[in-house]
Image 1 (cartoon, helix red, strand yellow):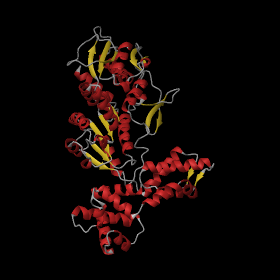
Image 2 (cartoon, one colour):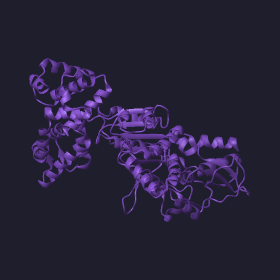
Image 3 (cartoon, rainbow, N blue to C red):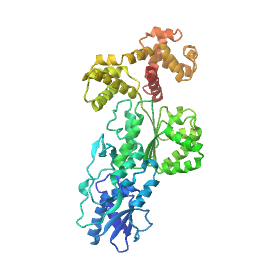
Length: 529
């Protein structure tokens, strides 16, 4: 039996990627023949894998048995933990009622309607799905619900059998996959394919793709992505999840916002269910292959939540389960965060996303206009104008485009021009231009480094004061039209050569000091609004 099953694995694995073999082939285990040797039983660890194996692998195994033993049998895939050695058994295949009961015991988001249990022939072909945004999907007849499928396997490889076979009661594969994807909380439209990559996020993008290729491995686990709001951290997290679900068959994953995790924890604690919550938390989350948790900074100053999350985090990492975390702040700068968590965050791959540069902002605008507003023409000059004046983050950039599009539609115009952008964004531009002053820059820098504005003007030679002062001078030179003498006067009556030295030093240091460069990007974004 062991030799035969190894032959089955090799045959089924032909042409598949190692990740697909690991996720879809290796979890299947042989149970053996039933008493009268009319059936050969295989166990699968989940309903999804049972349905997939019944649909694609059972016919091939049945053919192998016929070729090797010259014996016609029916291959059935059961939801059952295999025994230590293959034995003959008369275990019946999963029935409609038991499938309904098991579905009811799954987490709430994954529970499928009872009507999803149908009768499916093991070699009946499934309709070819559409392709949307790089993800294989099907569309329901009435509500246009997106359904993501498991990894694709050539349907030509599944040859119909010449011998008849009885039907097997199993949940409809499409419905099961739909419910599995719903359980992930992923957005199917946030993928690597529709992410615009530039200098500001190319390292983060490459790191995310590496995590997909080395999921759960040391050095890539956890992946900690940080950067200000609206720069695409959430998009990258969803892209990782969608890639693993669609291409590599990972079904046990979940995206969750830190606030949702906290709210659920507090609600159960108030209801006196904390012990039950810990058990559920471990059972529900530890079984995941991938946990995506967004905006972890929401846990700061929430000691009890941090403690519970620490236990979960440690358990998943120790089992080589992938964790991806996003934050608006570098790990060591998270205020009042458990030092044990900070240490573990830094033990993996920590990567920053910066505000997009001008060329990238233009590319984002043109792509969004082409994707969502194909009935309008956004000229290159108009895209450049919007990108030049909205520099803070992608979310505000897209908001500016939406405002211009609404203006164009109101005017019944088909082409978006620079003049139209000036008119539609005049209030935004007036406010933005008025905020960038030397005084505003000095206050922003002082707040960021937790010093007083008077320290910026002072003659103090304390290292932290000098550094903040030089940064304020550099930003003032970059973001205003003030001359060096005027800037010297604004910084406590200093000579223009002092300002020039400070600007040159910071400009040089930011090329090699990654942390300084990130701080400057954050300050620039804050100042520009």
